[in-house]
Image (cartoon, rainbow, N blue to C red; front, side, top):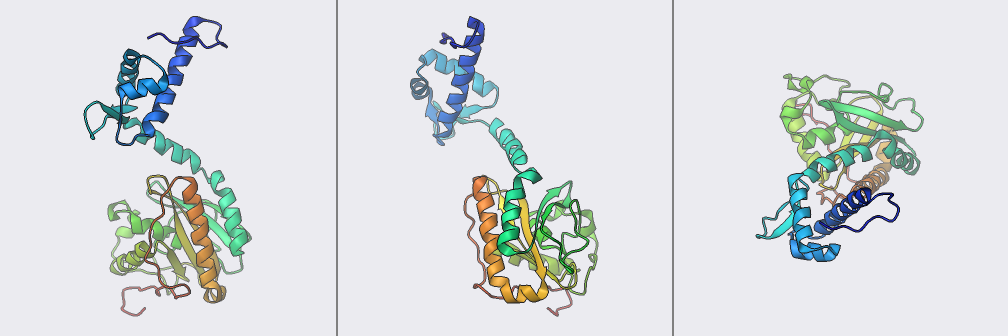
Length: 289
């Protein structure tokens, strides 16, 4: 395959390698623009290379998993499975705790509340960042690196609502769950019913279920495949929650949506209750909500 030399290269071999790499990267961008596939002839024309070079390039990309034959028809090529692995790495890099700091800062300021981000790590909830001054009665035991209590925290309920039960923490395989306050959901059946509401509204509440006097709201952050990659939450005194619920819900929904948009997530329709409506009270399985 004849390739033009790179002017900045000191040798022909280096120029050929760089040019081939450029063509491969350009080919990936072009193929990505054709979800149903693109023929080699059209790809070669776009790259301004010969048809034989186009065949060689596609063959190399298929061998490495970066391209594959399209199911839409013979002679068409789409991006290959290798991109799924690369995308997972990209999301992981994008969601380092430090990358969420601007979102948390804005959430803290707009809600005038303590803001949290959490991820699912090694089979359990982990709080990865907290911004804002801790209030006198706001989740005093929850600090950066805190793990567990997924059934008692709004941050964790989002994950439990979207994970299969076999991926839940081992602590949630017991016949009853740990009780943190009189409002904690301790019955597996009651938690399952509660998580249906979380999935429908795409929002989770903790109404003094982990810490007396503190209420929390959490929303999901999704990636370009609409996979759940983090949760965003706030905690406020119960009295303030009663007075400002509508405003707080709007703020956290807006910030979670903005963070998801940056990761390429599509909008997820919800079946939320009317603005200002009180969320369902926790049900501990006794039948008394």
